[in-house]
Length: 76
Image 1: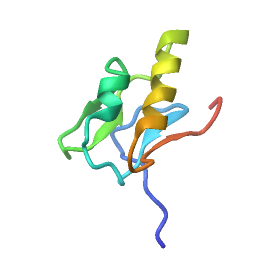
Image 2 (image 1 turned 30 degrees about the horizontal axis):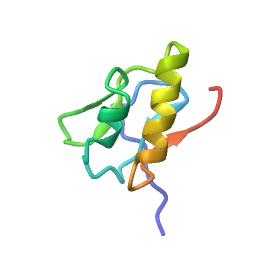
Image 3 (image 1 turned 45 degrees about the vertical axis):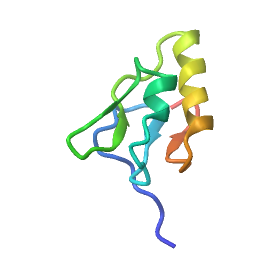
Image 4 (image 1 turned 180 degrees about the horizontal axis):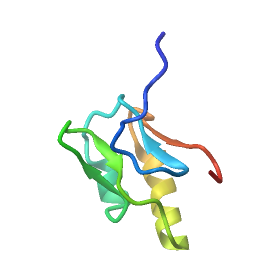
């Protein structure tokens, strides 16, 4: 099986969305200040979390993603 690829629209940082995204809007509902759609109609991280609330929301988005398309590389 081919490994999922990062959406190239993701900003650099620990959270990112892969090409397995179904555009279900779960991540945008959980973390609207950090996820949005791009021209490819897939979500991407446009802003890494900058405070505890955003960190919690991004983690919640990761947990709620039905395709496990949101990944966390740790403290990068």
